[in-house]
Amino acid sequence: MADESERQDVSWRALWQETSAVLGDRVHARWICETASAATGDEFLSILDEPATVRMVAHLDAMVARRRTGEPLQYVTGHWAFRHIDLAIDRRVLIPRPETELVADVALRLAAAVGPTRTVVDLGTGSGAIGLALADELPIVGTTIWLTDASRDALDVARANLAGIGRSAQNVRIAEGSWFDALPAELRADVIVSNPPYVAVGTSELDAAVGEWEPPEALFAGADGLADLREIVAGAPHHLVPGGALVLEIGADQGAAVRTLLQSAGYDDVDIRQDLAGRDRIAVARRAR
Ligand SMILES: C[S@@+](CC[C@H](N)C(=O)[O-])C[C@H]1O[C@@H](n2cnc3c(N)ncnc32)[C@H](O)[C@@H]1O
Image 1 (cartoon, protein in one colour):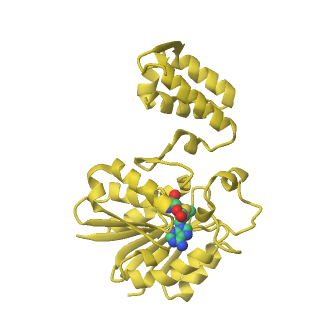
Image 2 (cartoon, rainbow, N blue to C red):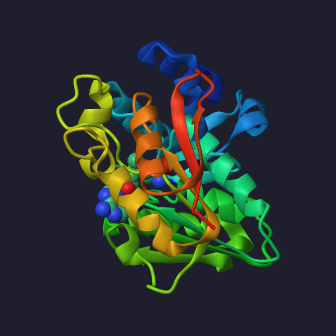
Image 3 (cartoon, rainbow, N blue to C red):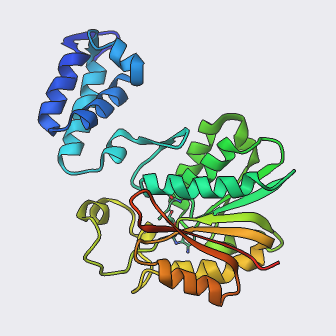
């Protein structure tokens, strides 16, 4: 086995160029090179003329080979940024999406407005993206965040990511189970946030790479994609304080249906919000007081 200190006569600049040519994508090539070199941002730029170690080149080659099979970049590099945190990501969890950062932002503002203490639940946490970002950004004093998932594998990933948020980790509780079954019966939250599965089984609109690589239990929710949203809308009032907020990520074509679900269930202030592309993406409502 190659010694860690052994050097190959190839610079990071050359490796980045080669990788860009192989993948046909300079940005993806840079992310892979940054992961292999363990240097990011300006630090990576500062080592461009330094040689890579044999072990780093082997890691780079392995990642390039995986990427060439069509495996998503985030699984290949094994990590991905979400708001201000870097999450370990693998095939046990959904790759956190940019639109989910907006969902987290809405939940964050609602939770930050509650004080002096606040309890937030992230249902179907996957990698921990939403709940850990909130734990990271809310005040350490007075904040409790519950992360739940029905998938033990996903919770193992979320637990690994907990270590990455430093002192705020002390505010996080992790619980396994289907939706509200995971929570203590008496728990009442100020904010419940969820990005549940919302893809209709059999849809022709799902990106092929998503269907091939990401966990089906994170994606599909019955024939109309609303099965899990229905369950969460029905159960949340029992676990929200009066006036507490429910924040849901929804599919772009589900705005009207979710508005009806929330209104029929007696929620107040039902609001369907759009993502940066103008598509319905976030449902917000309050438990009646
Ligand atoms: C769309 S993914 C969202 C993951 C993460 N919150 C995010 O935004 O990246 C949905 C998550 O819900 C979980 N899930 C699916 N069915 C569930 C259920 N019945 N109870 C709890 N979690 C469930 C999946 O395991 C998956 O982690």
